[in-house]
Image 1 (tube, rainbow, N blue to C red):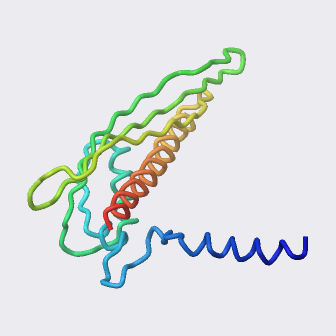
Image 2 (cartoon, rainbow, N blue to C red):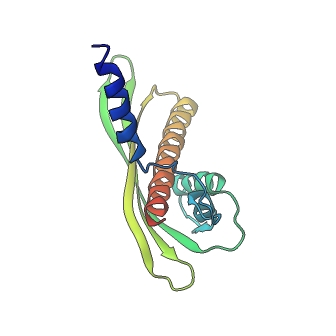
Length: 164
């Protein structure tokens, strides 16, 4: 067993030497990288509140790169579904679903570069207290929007990483 240990260490180091993994947000020698590409994305104005929250989170996470090289178009869909109700306790559970279809386009030519969809399902309860119920629904909307924004940021980062 003692003779086998050095041999296993040598084999493991040779296997890892061929690994070409790199950090997702790493910068290349020429200064290009995912963070630079993300900072060049302009996000379209949005009309509904959930999509505005997604847009704001994306803009905050992208940073400011000056001139926009890319434009992100988003098409939001919202749905709230009642899941269950306990009439004896005046408690109702809902599921809020936010789905955003997106398309990343070149700012100059308008050509589509990447597209897809992201979604989030968030549950919340109402207790027949108007202010508390409104706040629970708004909180669910904000949580779903943050989750979708994070997913979109990761999808776009993966797209730019695969191009480099």
